Length: 67
Image (tube, rainbow, N blue to C red; front, side, top):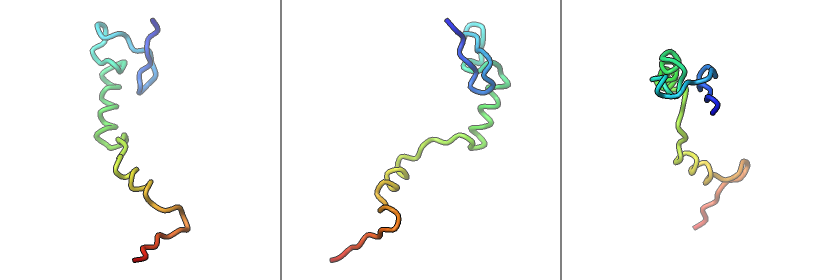
């Protein structure tokens, strides 16, 4: 079975019994990933914002609320 690449440096990652930093290749890459999360470089999608964007009218059009 081929080794999977490290998500940080792309080096092959040994299986868990040989590597306690799984899914990363080393403690360094694991720390880099944590730093990226803490530095807000990674973001989870905001489903509510996506839904609100879907509700907006196309550019150039305005909604009229005639009563």
